[in-house]
Image (tube, rainbow, N blue to C red; front, side, top):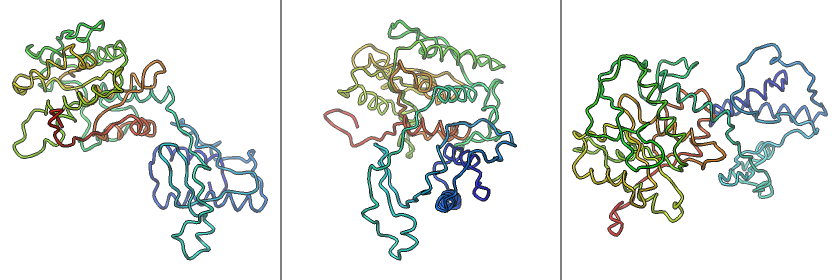
Length: 387
């Protein structure tokens, strides 16, 4: 693109790079700079770029662009581009604090100094890139495909990513227990049993040999989420419950108190009066063989109507399915809708397997950056009786 000054190729390559790569390598960065240096030289010589010049893109068939264009990559004002090095970004406002101009760096031996006149914070500001309705729907579809098909169509790798080994085909009896009986523990006007397993004493049935149960369970879950009143937060319960629990002699079950501490912290915030929280836990965490006696009262509190837990919905995800799929799909289904609040996902899971398989990686990273909330626990507070 630089050698032939093919504007359309440069715009397409830079746009695709922006979607797929968070931080380009040194050689890639130098290649990008060479494009704008050549632009500066051409414009400086008084050469005006014509949009009628034939492009290589007119002779090849490329897949549709995943995201949006990076914007104009040519400057026809005859002045070319000014290239700054060592810029910083205010992540809240998007304002750029400009560093050294490139010709100053090349002509000045003292390269580490910043020229005050070039530091113009706020002169340039990055524009926010919103997730389009198409991007939201693409992420929902891809997560749904990972659940039901085992992979996203077009993802050629045989591995899941995130250190989770090879992909496992959907279907077949893996010998694990599954039960779809439930009850509506809070008596709300939506049916919790459509997607939540609430009867911890029910005898499980064996998984059927085909994977139709998985499709049916997923459809019930998506219907349940769509019919549920608006919620603001989804919690990856297992990730919270297993946090810092890898010490010697640690119990096999999650730390139910730790999960409850986080739930109470969120529900008792002064600004959370209108919040509703969805807590996701796999059904194995409610097995009588695993659940300690002292945790029964905590579970009953989660399912009760006493404030502030009346603004909590406990979602027990079914056996034979990854609980991560459920809280992520809940956040994606209700996120991006004009009539629903923005949904935050509380987890320290970096979702590397999903990122690895998602073809719209730029959209997924953008969603993850804006909607994931990491957590930690401080010292035990005797007054609050929790960390």
